[in-house]
Length: 489
Image 1 (cartoon, one colour):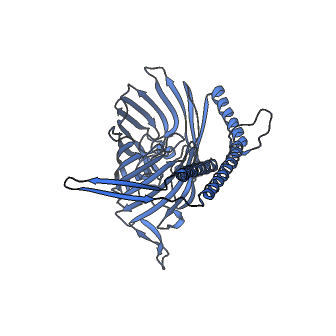
Image 2 (cartoon, helix red, strand yellow):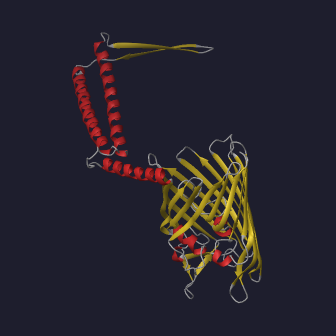
Image 3 (cartoon, one colour):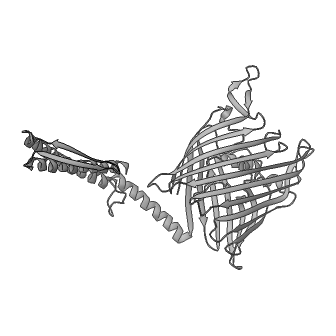
């Protein structure tokens, strides 16, 4: 398409140039036919206190070579017309080759456009077949890019960041399969760095975990709509948590920023295994409640009863203002005196999220999240632990293709239970620019700068290494710059 636009641009430029030359010819011809070679122009300027008359005489003389100049200009116009005709012919040939359409029946594709059109037709036919016969929808998302950490940390690890690392990476590949209806299901299979991070901390069976994996069945649950009132939506299986303003992305739901927040990485669970029910009372109020095996790891947390989760959503009629209050409470595992996990520690969290889209500033979204959590028992250093944090988002769409998203947050790990065992306060600020590539539905380019900071020296820096111990020096902060492409369909 860019090549076609270029040729069309050339055609228009040449056409404008031709019109301009024709204008010059007409002007020159008028001067040649004027019997009076001199023209006198008189201009009078009047002021309140004086009258000033200024007369300017300009004489234009037609030289003996005027006819030759007219003939030369006529020749140039003829050449431009010929070039325009040639360019138009070339553009038509390219358009014919690039047209994205399948070939005629029983005819093998020849051009690139015909091959692409044939593939699109085949994919559309498969999707339609799945939807019509089985009611199944299949979608996918791919997120890949490059990130540079200016600290150049060992092993390319961005400290306190789980989903992104220094260097080239496949951030996420997601396959989403679902079936709507009275009885259905949802499956999300992730690969890449996202899967590695999730599987490293979440386990959904009693099999001994073996660490991070590059494929993770993040969600797989059954759905059923009970015929009560407006319909009660029931889910049973493994699903993502209710907590948090940010989510694990899928094809139709992505975050404002490329990297995940400190609250997401350090303060909240990722997934649960259990049951969940949701009900919409009216246009203003909806609620969700459920029981699950606890934070992330049911293999370790399931021997002292389920956790209770809940969500209450309040919004106005046009949903430009909303308040979502999430919470979870129940027993979770802590190390026992014999080194084994015991689930006698009550862990609870509350997480309100407010969103406002002011009508007097179109295309602006303001969002704020606050998290407070605490866990009883000898969680760290023989005592209980608490943590809290807040995040704010300012998102503005300059146009349908260009978006700016600024995030600022802090995370206070009051006992060091969620970081590295040392009590500290973290903060970060992130600026993300997202651009939807024209004429390629679902393709987004992102550029992001982020600065992390800690009240303690917590960030490794490979530029400074102790020559005796070989250990990296620790700094208060780290800076990263990332460029990513996201394609969802």
